[in-house]
Length: 469
Ligand code: ASP
Ligand code: MG
Image 1: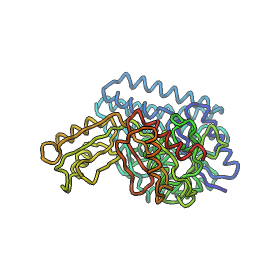
Image 2: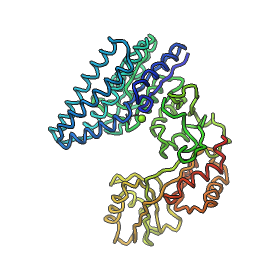
Image 3: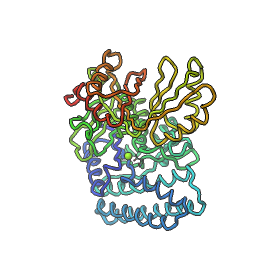
Image 4: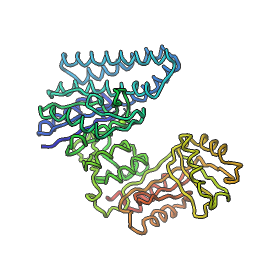
């Protein structure tokens, strides 16, 4: 008998029918004798709209609060009507939805009157997406005859720090509380159905785990319960060797290590929350990405590195768009300790996230890649802080670049991988603007002109025959 945490994401629940799909999958495994915990994220797009609604409220737009309330109520009620047949259960869910939306209205109205949106109140607003969708899941599971019980991240015992918007779970307390609350109900044959993404501080103030955080909830709960596997149900077959829109012959990767999957998440293969794998990795719990529309497919299994065939040198290639390259140069930087610290200190204080760094041994320049939307801010801040002090002569930027990230644990200690990567790219006449390889050797990343990005990805995909894997 297996214990499984199953997370159902927004895209897998987009339409009302999909709650039925979710419920029939859960009941299939329960019927086989599995103990299942379900984690539910908000309906597709709802978190983004809550964010917009909170911004509108801050602008003092009371009308928008009422309009939004109407829309969100109707959408969730409609999904409940389509998913739940039993009249009694449906009414109970509708009641829960209405009173939850009433609470949301109060919060948004409060923001209108105060005219201020703090990170704390924003998290409170964002929590409603999961609170609402989880009620529908709860009703649907009961409608198919399961004994389901509704929990929020807080009521199940997930405690975080108060870093609103990206709160960090306090894992020791959390694991202890989750285990002691859920184990007895699982023993009784109950299916706990839990809001993803949201939690609370020790004082009970609502927090969120960062966008896409329902995955994180799933692995936290999985680690606390020591389950056999965590399944992330989504709308694609698994992690792919590359984006099929760029490489039509891209394949699903059947097995990959935690480290490799983490690299891919960092490089924007938006299948998982980047931090979500940590709790699973620590407790050695396999994570499986599966397609709710293709449940016979085993998906991608993410496991400890020792369990992955070492023959695969390169696993996947990602293209990171919307980035910019900044180059800081000046002879004054040569042999001047602390230059890098000054440069990155300025960027850090201005909240500029750095994706990639390289400095040549000549030390006459430092190049780095940032998100394109922070380019202007970064260049201004660097110029104001550093120019004219004898250290740095010039700050230049290019906004028409992209980053190609080649990921695979087999690259470690395998000579010649980099040369194959760059030869493949060179054969297509593509100029490489900047290169970085982390000392983990799990990935090689390089920047090329925006117009060369897809070509470079295809060249490497071909070179390593990833379509044949
Ligand atoms: N609903 C949240 C978001 O859109 C969390 C999640 O989907 O995992 O970011
Ligand atoms: Mg999501």
